[in-house]
Length: 416
Image (cartoon, rainbow, N blue to C red; front, top):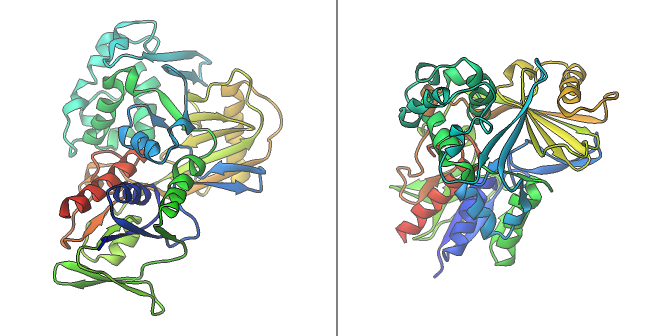
């Protein structure tokens, strides 16, 4: 008989595991506690702006092989769009200076040898000083591994690592930072071409996966929250959804627990999970971007860190945003809009806007918290974990989420 894998959670880690297992010949049943799929990686209609927006602005890179392979498997790789070359425009709001980092299209970081393609006012020696990150251990601090000051740090390293780690870079794990540097700056421009889901995260990464699973005869249930895992010996034998709704697992069936860490700890007492988290602030403004607006603009010297240009809106991201979660919304919107006007060269009164503040957006990417991330395998032989908070070797990113789902699926496939 065909074996069934129950995927608990329909975020991108759960969906990536589900698609991989479906392609591997398993029957898949996805159970999602909420009324929609996607978790932190989804889109929704916002009445304040009268637009469909993402609950978070997420950037992928052409070297994110797990995420791109997942998009390819659901037929939506073409929905991830970006420039033909790995170029990143930046603006310094304090000085008004603008420049473009040009990583080219090589498999090697040859761009560091070309003064015209580097960050202005930096030398080759500045980049060589980043080398210790490439082999740093996860228990080391970024601040103890590389110099966290100077032009290169302020204009490239700090924005890059802040976005990836979601903590002030000096306090972050040097090992996790090193993984980002190895897979981006050191991998050459071919791995660094920026990609965004211009038509929305849900339409590119979430809804097509759900549709694909359903069309192939697999089940995806919403508002179906798992309450208890029934165990016998070293196996999960029952899933209890409350109200008498129970599923008994047959021999050879498996479970992938792809839920947030707090839910995982409640369902699986004793499992290690990160305990500290950091906020991310995203804001969306209904305004037509300037005709020459870059899809992604790095912003230095202001409140805003990254500015995204979408049809009919400009959106921003601010990482490590705990200091902003309790700021009055109107005051925060005005402050962000002032930065946008300077960065994008627009003007006018505050347009229709929406602010999304996620208090527990990612685990705190410090050595202490990284050490609490569990692997995909558990003490139960048919139970596996997935999620960007598990030990993926990366900070909490879409690539890490998909990688965790792939890893959990591969472990299930290996037991067959």
